[in-house]
Image (cartoon, rainbow, N blue to C red; front, side, top):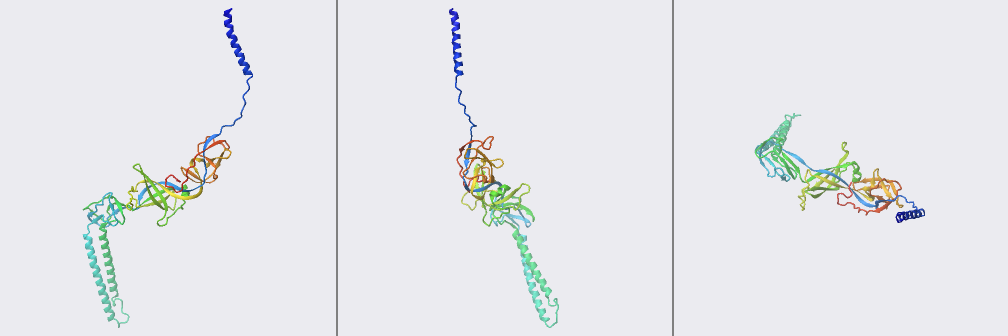
Length: 400
């Protein structure tokens, strides 16, 4: 009997518990059903604020000397002396003698030419005197011939004088050419001859380049012309031109120079579809400056920022807000996504300037959004507006 009770009692308790649970579950009130739409997508936005901006065009170029020439002997002879600066890397001033060719032969030729001029001058005087005598003797003769009046002899004497003077001038030129110099300040890059060597006319002596000015041939893309705001074939007025900032990293330090854009090619390169502009930098070695800056040497590859045109009250958006096909995602007042096409008048890696399609005060999405749909709900989180600065010094600000 006790054994039966021990078996039945737990089963009765378990059955009672299950029955109670079933009873409670049967009479449990159903939860209230809520109909919720999809949760809004959180996005970062930036409010459009009109501002005056100055566009910039960024490009790269290699620095080249304004003048780079070969020094060539114009007369023959033995090299009598060379300047101490006539060596690779040597510097020279305008008119400084770099190479002197032995000039004794040219001095003698000059003396001989001077003597021939003196002789020809005497010949002219004699011919004129003879002509005067002949004219007096033939004054009573009717229609005397030109030969009788000594006119051909006078003409011949004058022609001889002209030829003698030309020979004298040539002798002076040859003497001057025995001293090789250049009419600009510069540096020597190569030398081919040395003291005592005989050279003929036309023999290369070395190579040199000017240091008073350097030029940069700047490649500009066709779509950058609008930002530049200059016509094809542009030539700046004397002393004028657009400002150009030049940057280069040398030894881990950023160096900077300033120049002027002075002209543009009159045609577009048919192979590259680029147009080239020429910028110049005066005194690239800083000889006329009190500051000891790094020289802007020929052959250096540099980044260049050209000051472009200014736009008043421009609608500028971050480049991340401009989507494929020139579309922009705008958040309207109801918090819904509006996919809108815009007219872009200028774009760069950092920003885009919109001509039509946006209005001041509207919010554009600057963050990534997956599967955007017209009218989808979004939750905008304002990103602090970036400062818009016109004509700043940074090579990234306003770049094109």
